[in-house]
Amino acid sequence: MSDLTVSLIQANLHWEDKAANLAMFDQKIDSIKERTEVIVLPEMFSTGFSMQSERLAETMDGSAVQWMKAKAKQKNVIITGSLIIEENGEYFNRLIWMLPNGQYGIYNKRHRFGFADEDNHYSAGDKRLIAQVKGWKINLTICYDLRFPVWSRNTIQENGEPAYDVLINVANWPERRNVPWRALLQARAIENQCYMIGVNRVGNDGNDIYHSGDSSLIDPIGEIIYHKAHDEDVFTYTLSRQHLDELRARFPFMKDADRFMIL
Image (cartoon, rainbow, N blue to C red; front, side, top):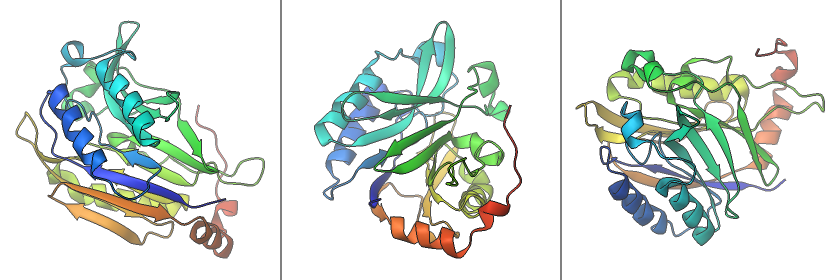
């Protein structure tokens, strides 16, 4: 299996302004000069973390989804991030995994952040999404999911291989709780023996809550490859398949893990 190049975009989102955010991400994606294969955007990247679900939601035919489709095709790249989506009268904080050919996978946020009333404005998802690209298996999660290790627990499959190789978390995680954010990103990488990618926003949102970003890329033994606080940034890095396989072979502790099923 070959290596995989990913780009992390940490941005200051325009509060509840879809057109401004899409224009901003257009520019940031166009600024990537290296060849990249997956671009990761923050949670609710077109609006910020808003509870105005009825006013701001779009369908899967909406402008932000169409923008993802067009941009992925234009750049021949996978783009992922979450949006406010309405479907059959329900509202979801939905991560979209958009392929260059216009096909996509979806993940509806499982753990809604009750402290911010998210559970009263959005329905919960009940299925994980593990995407595949170039032989890499990628588990996709959103913000508050990071606090619940069982939901993202890597398991050995019947073929003897782990369920996934990369864990991605897209977030609007406030600076006042950045110590758990950084610790949990590192813990998820170590316990699941995978690359961990966390992409957060920066700046104040419409509720005057400051976000320091602290977007990170961490290797399967917890070594921090990348970390950026406070400033907007675009970071591109190639994940090494050889490094991952060698670490798993040298420290094959996952074979001793407890077996369980998420019901």
